[in-house]
Image (cartoon, rainbow, N blue to C red; front, side, top):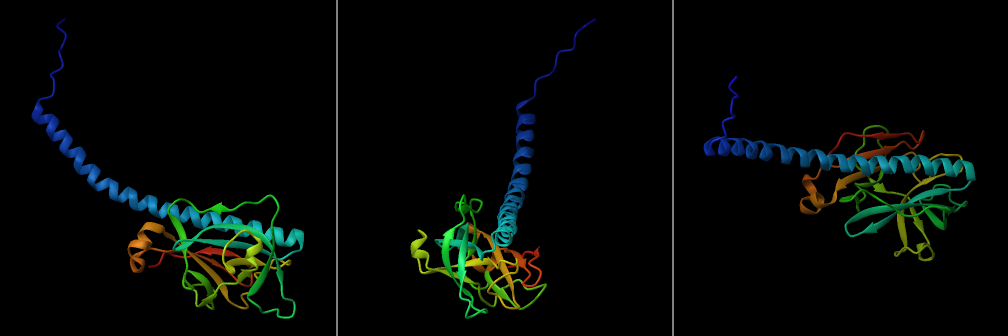
Length: 213
């Protein structure tokens, strides 16, 4: 029985196949990049969401005001750490708290590479809208006395919980934290998709809102 010999590809066929592969790559790479960028902001939001639950649990178990303190790096907040803080008992509505110590056994947690929370009230602030607000309208609670903490600057924004587990320093306002892809934000602030994480002032439940510009 005669064995069939495979015919080699011609140069024209190879060029045609390479052309198809180049076209497919040109279509797929931008879509993949966009998908990956969105995934990074989702990872950042999930990371903070988990830390919010942990900070609240520590506040209740240790019976102490507990804060997630955010550190500024360049144009945004790119890391955070859990701290125990003092509250001015003479002013229960105060939005300013004093750093006491970092929670033992904790360290600064970096957001995923190339993600951050911008340094604006819109992106890290309080909103009176209980369910749908995607922008802050006033400053987030702050932690002061950071000179003794190793952080530079007089104060830093924070997500703070009372010893009873309620959100502190926000009155009847929710707290919204919006995550962005750093490079896209620096290139065009007005066109950068932002992924908001909303923390309810009454129930402390977290909710991811639809991405916004």
